[in-house]
Length: 267
Image (cartoon, rainbow, N blue to C red; front, side, top):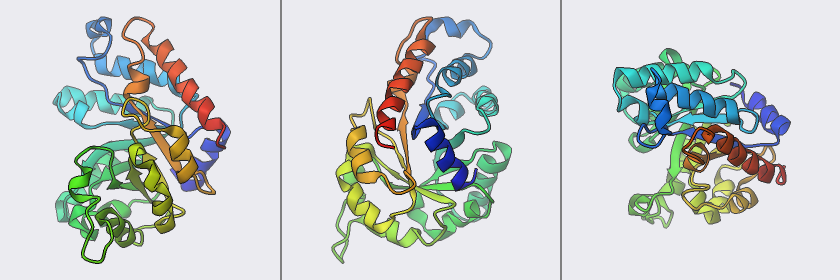
């Protein structure tokens, strides 16, 4: 998907919501376990319930590959079911070099034709380059995450008095462009978005952590929105597990609609 197509969808739907499909057999409604493919049946109903309110879906690959071949089949069926005009993110957090990196890119851009994939940039530019070779595909680099352990490395000051995540942003922003790279910045780090925007004013940011993880949509929008909106705010558990009975999809729809209405106020 091209950048302008994503921007147009955001304005058309008055939403920058990304729905995370972190589908766990232990958490989905029990009645779905009677279906041949419970994972896909759950995802299908969630997509039907939320597609009018979101602009992106983000399957977390770990929830699928943990199930072996069946999980990959469920993932493929889910990806094929998502409407073509909605941005897709493979939340895979891969990070390697050489042929390995090239094959990861082929996996998520050809075998499973996602629009984007999350990448850990720790190994440097040659771990990113194979992903950038695909036209109209996006590489989403981890920059500043929401987890407690982010302080172990990401917010450590380096010898020149910069945070490590700032060095990652400054070094990597020239590897690609605003047309094919984004960054992950956790919603619980919203107070740092102003500084981040000074480094990458025009890039899109994928922002997880709103909802169940305690991030504030208002703070993210206040400090993170740019002239093209430039945000994809993800909610996973807060939407897909809104209910655990037969009407779970109705409740998921209400949760997604509520976030969309809040987002409309910032556009």
